[in-house]
Image (cartoon, rainbow, N blue to C red; front, side, top):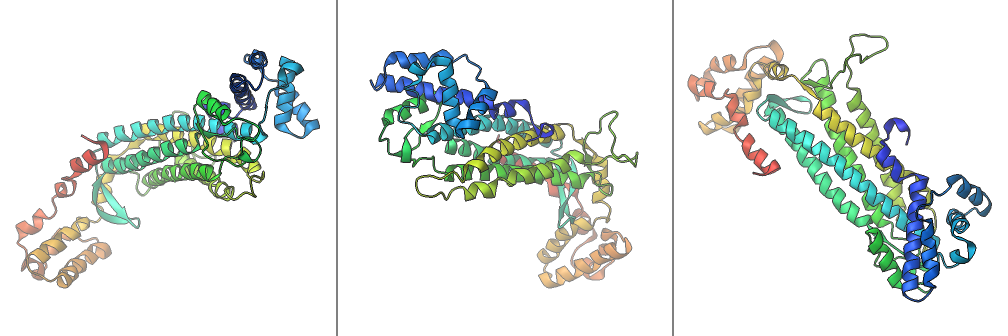
Length: 434
């Protein structure tokens, strides 16, 4: 992923230096286990750890790989240059390249998950803060983009909080899904390596042994992981889409923070565009782009092929780096979002009481009017508001069929705004507890 959409902490997980460091730790821990089992001399295992403080030369490994055409062999050759050929002869004993590559990938995904969970926690904290801040800030709810009934901005933030809380649970499960390692040798039978080596390596690196691997860790685990990233990304887009709508000139119920010196357009000096929300929409597409290839990686030939390899070398870093950046951008956007409560009230009252139509409909049915007639009476008065800008309550009070069923006081009561917000505390308790 390009630096523009990257955070250094996540990028570091996927750097060649980090990858080679993990490879070294896998090989060194495997040697320790082999020595404990008496398979290799203890002195040789101890010698491997002489390289624990070495900064592996990426250029040198690339140089060797240009000849060997094999990345793991290139690394092992470079390792031998540091610890000596004799001491290195027992490194990788009974192992296959996928033991190193797959276990490393899962370690990287676990570490990436930890950063993503921290980013999600920041998003959740921001959403909760803004939800309580605007718990009683009334705005119009919309369905199909059209005025529906009153709600509050706090409920808007609360529903996004609930969605992101579910996404956090999903990511915790996805992290557990990929937190496995395999040191099972060619085709996964442990023919040339004791299963206890795998158990030791996994324990030292914070993984669980894969119950059954072939020559690779099953890719349904990774499919689930990247699918989860896609769901999280869709949650980001859901929030971003709402903010983009709220910032439209015709709506302007909220807008992204516009910093001093910021410019909105090269041509039009008046512009203040929802660029962060739009950017998040695009980044979400990039994260979801990894989902289908991850699903297609599940079906491999026999005990292994490498059709998955090129895919994962790209989607592993790209999807996690992009999502990490997007989550932090979203958190900052929410934290600094500028809200305009007066505009919310003005928008809600644009059609002069029209949004109370359901209350009147229900009152008529409770007064003994059939639902069909109640709907007809309310709709004919509502259409006057749409078409002529009339006041809904005034029209109802002037309709003899309506007033035959409802008194003026009963009609007036149906325009109480507090009716629509009386259960906000109950919903908040469900979402946030307490």
